[in-house]
Length: 260
Length: 250
Ligand SMILES: Nc1ncnc2c1ncn2[C@@H]1O[C@H](COP(=O)(O)OP(=O)(O)O)[C@@H](O)[C@H]1O
Ligand SMILES: [Mg+2]
Image (tube, rainbow over all chains, first blue to last red; front, side):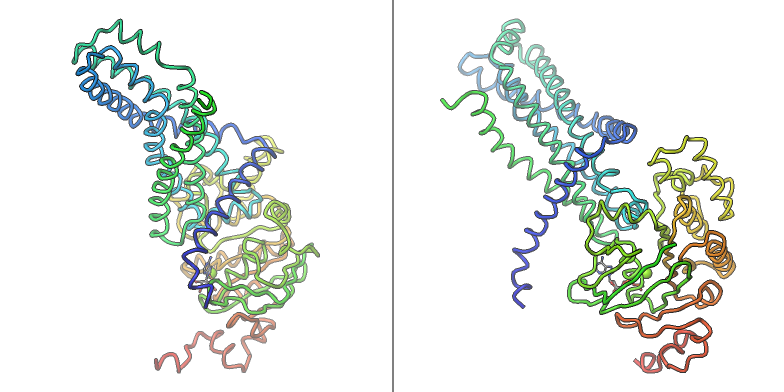
């Protein structure tokens, strides 16, 4: 049958369509009714606390390695004191949001997909619907909101820790001049770089939560289905983050720095 | 009082036609049983009655409203008329018994917490599980889970209650108590009931009318007494639990 041979095209398109419908339902729910505060606070707590260790380690080691590598290159041309500036700009607008989001996708996104997937295969989502509760209102919206709120904050945390770690490595291990480096860092780090980083983190937060919830809600039957939903949530969220980051960098830099 | 009418209902999953033109009507206040072999589409049919699944063609009307034409948010309102007991009980495993049972009331927030606690205790008493409020679903036995699931469905006083295999997988004594509970709910709360089962004892003790679902259609219908006396080989084999000799030979 023709429909069968075209399935390689039809399945991804159907998936995209269903994902778009889910996003629309989330928007409708956000406009229609206020999410319940306890649900939101619980999710914020879960996402924030669950991600602390991961975010600290990611921020610190990224800052450290970035500092060391930049120093090794810049030292050749006697630009030691520009090291921290490079660290802060690249952490603030690129590595901070991207790496934090990837780590959160790995931990929180996978957990969300597993949780919702399990609820689906054990008919708990159907039970919700029979109890006159829309699963998007009850399950998805608090998770999406919490991730969108938490990810920029976690990113800020990672960036701060990263700069601090870079400072320690640069000053105490590599012997760069603390006062000049710090001064240069503040001088060359534009507020727009930080703003771009924040906007990216917010968008990535929405990506992680919606993709993970979508994968959980559309999970196939059985333990295998939940396992697949979990890994797919992580993989799809990560790939979407990496690809959209390029376009966001192009777009946001044009937007904030003009076309020149 | 509420009634349900199903007309020419068809549903397929991929290439498999699960329901292939189902017609029947549930009168208000009656207790109807739907029987059939495992995997013949009983759960699928039941899920259509409450709008959890949408038919490919055909209609499901509840009090004159066609569920097949509604979106999910409109369906949520219609579902207030329904209570459903799932085959697996489908309790929310992150919530305690009290939170499960009071779920709808806690979400609506029309009653104060003490009033909700009172209603929860009352309905748990009805299903003979008084005092289990603080327990988690994982700590309960299969029969207790089904009772909690039933309490969760009954607390908001639905007009129609759907039961998906309420006694499957339970020992005979517990099954018996669940049967009694269902019969009591039908009589006391005067609800319309649809019981999906393959337990003929439940059929005989709880329901007034039986439909046999076979190959995606209603193969036979009648009272339990008529079913037990039926000469039709298929009905007869089902009622008395005898395998088809042809299938055994294979
Ligand atoms: N969501 C679904 N997707 C695909 N197939 C399904 C789905 N739900 C049920 N089926 C199929 O429909 C048939 C009937 O299932 P079901 O109604 O659960 O049977 P039962 O009569 O035992 O309750 C089964 O063969 C099952 O594989
Ligand atoms: Mg079933």
